[in-house]
Image (tube, rainbow, N blue to C red):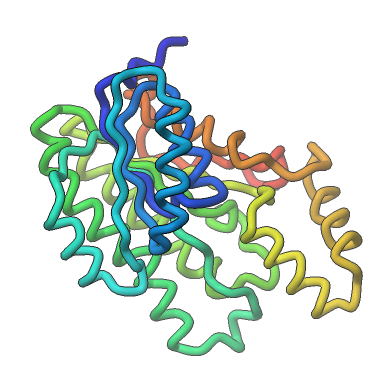
Length: 261
């Protein structure tokens, strides 16, 4: 299937590792000009070099150094560049784990800022060009917790749900401009975030990290963790012309772990 993504521009957040990096690389392979966004410039430069290696067309890739704990900084960085993006991939690291009852107000505020405020800043920056072009794809990488809350991830469950409802509202408002807004919901995916979750569960339960990892794998009918690129495949398809009539949905990429429809 030809995804017709040549000559498109994408802004990909959290793109120095894991799912964000995999999505950036696959978009570049499809002919997209990719602008990476993350806070570590050294890692951004390394991924930029990888994008240049995999690109098959005359593409120009770039990056922005921005801290998602500071929406004002993000706004300033966006104001300094040409905001001509057809595709936006909202993606950032998840909040720390723990029971929701024990969460502090500061934890909620930090997560809300990183996951919803900064998503909103990015959308407001890129949508005017998408409207002009009559083409826009906004893909939010969230979590299967928006369908089925996950034990031990209280703040994450709460904030991810807020982002999903924000996204659905946005899809209803922007669909008339040929701009789609969809959510990709990764299950347990082999990333640094998953390693952190496994280590935390092992410390709290007294089990080994191997035992915890095996239990998590067995929770999915696939009996394994996803590879980051497997989640990225869904992102790239939703970014394409072929997904033009898919709007306002949540797409679990979890090997069948989520028990709800």
